[in-house]
Image (cartoon, helix red, strand yellow):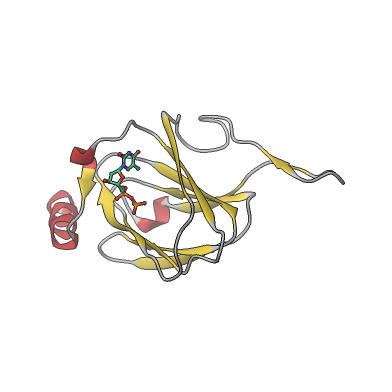
Length: 138
Ligand code: TYD
């Protein structure tokens, strides 16, 4: 998978004087069906999350509140995304290294994931990730 497979996606937004509403339907607004939802919150100042890649997992990340930066790297190219709107989400394809940082105070990060949690799907070492990426490019 390449960085070009990852993209910012605009979600439906129902505007209302009482507040806005955004919804996500599995497989319709994002390019996979999700089996798991998790979220990061109470994130202390200066914290960094991620620092890994996945072998098969697809993810979609939405800033529910506040802002943060997502750094993506496919082993060749890298790119940062500033996430600060709850109607935008970032699709992350498998085999992409990610680091998440610069969380604002009160930030909440929602993740929709294509599979149940499986530690065996993680690359937690950057050199091991690079090796796996290069092996599939041969
Ligand atoms: P991790 O995926 O490394 O967090 P992040 O990418 O946000 O920095 O997960 C942190 C810990 O939580 C790790 O011990 C695995 C555990 N965990 C679960 O048990 N279930 C889950 O769905 C997730 C995402 C993590």
